[in-house]
Amino acid sequence: MPPTVHLVRHAEGFHNLSVENESMRDPDLTPLGEQQCADLRSAFPSHARLTALVASPLRRTIKTCDLAFGGHDKLYPIVLLDTLQEVSDAPCDTGSSKDALRAEFGDKIDLQRVRGSWTQKGDGSPFEPTMEALMARAKSARRALREIAGDADGEVAVVSHGGFLHFLTDDWDGVPIDSATAWSNCMCRSYQFAGSPDDDGDVRLVETKESWKRRQPASRQPLTATEQREIRAVVQKRLVPHLNIKA
Image (cartoon, rainbow, N blue to C red; front, top):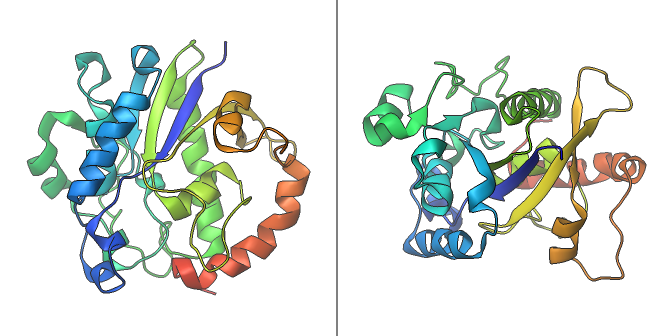
């Protein structure tokens, strides 16, 4: 069996409570967010099959990953990927320094894949919130996840952010009008890797049938890769103001 990647949006953070709170730098989880992690931990059926934990280096994603999936020595440290960070350059979506993360989380995290410049999201940065940079970052993140997952029959839990998960999966279906994402806090969807038909250097993440059935009416079928490409530009344009993407 090919490896399975379980993608999760982080639990509720204090920045999710109000627009004003988006000025908070790298905010923590709320008490409700911590409960959401506990609920996901109870509901997740594949703890015994997990071989690795991966997260964006923001504090809310690290904590979600730890609270929902941590607890087995073999799963630590949590591999942090700077390419999984959230889209915008708002304070709430800008992370902490590597030294600060190391001081807070210690041996629970692996910072080898986090660049020292990962908190710099200005002009020319690979983390700049432009469509071009986001598409490139998503491709890099998929390739890194494919490398981490390997070829064994294992499963990997990955915690990222509601906006960026659309870029990572290249799935633009179901985003509500006037919303930044179709992913709710602590939502978990499961994917497997496939080749990219138009880019030999890329990989695709294809949602499993079981994951799709958990969250959709039985009569609804997932969009094909061609259909996703057809709606991509329209949805991305609509998301620009909600995700603070630069024109």
